[in-house]
Length: 277
Picture 1: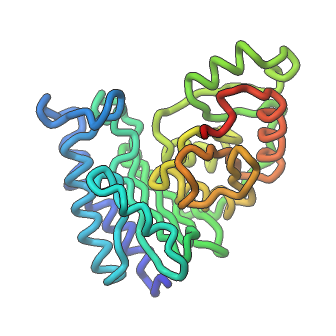
Picture 2: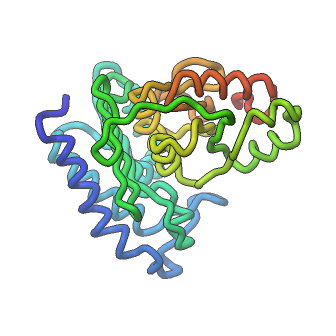
């Protein structure tokens, strides 16, 4: 679906948008430029401006292909239905992944774009904005991180990964010493894009999320698969961008790490790992 040079145009658009809308506002936001969409979920003027610029640019790269952006969905939840249309395409955009970090002046935020065709991710881009690290994946063509083709590396003796605070606390409280001993460092960067890049860089093996908003995960899960790993719901079905937001997600850059993490986490039988009804 992408023509020659289109992926490079997406990358150029992302970097231009980051330079124009995100970096000038980083550590430079006024109080009235940050608001809560709901308790604990904030948005800034940078999110909105970044999404508008990205949507305009993507419309020029693939005319007629709609954009499903995080902030647009906040205003019109029906846009999510575009992700699941059989035979059709759409862009999924997270204009500022890690907004809470950005607003607090922490340099862990990213920009994520995914192209979906027939309800499946076919291309994805993650830009670590503060550090200018970039991962690009196309289905069947692998994933490149800063230009180098990436293949997942076998897990070390311990599984290191990214999980939320509540699940990490439950692991410490509920896993047996033997089970917990299989896990190394577990933490969260509060930025899914940065976490996927850390896995590609070989500094972690897996990630686990209870909520699976497509702008956070559609691109990253494609990258995990293209690296030789995979992505599954808590119920073991393959991850899909249009899956219910509460279906859960376990992902890793190798099949071995994915199987080990999945088996370990399922053995724990913790309520937090049960998909919400």
